[in-house]
Image 1 (cartoon, rainbow, N blue to C red):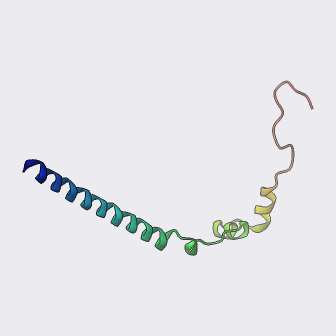
Image 2: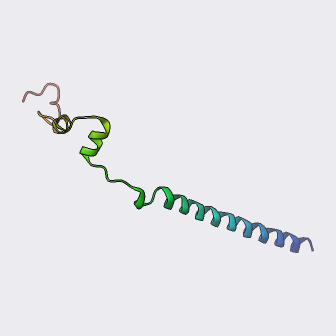
Length: 79
């Protein structure tokens, strides 16, 4: 009788754990859908970010494209 009781106990434990894991997956899916789904994302472009940060549009455009060489020259190398 000992083996049968242990088998019933394990089966019940497995069923409860599977149910809890399924419930947690449903809760995670619901949280994603409520807060992180594509419907809740906003489009951010450079002008909108500049306005939000208080950077004038002209200054943001000049800083975005720096003048001069792309990378500094290696030491000891003359251009």
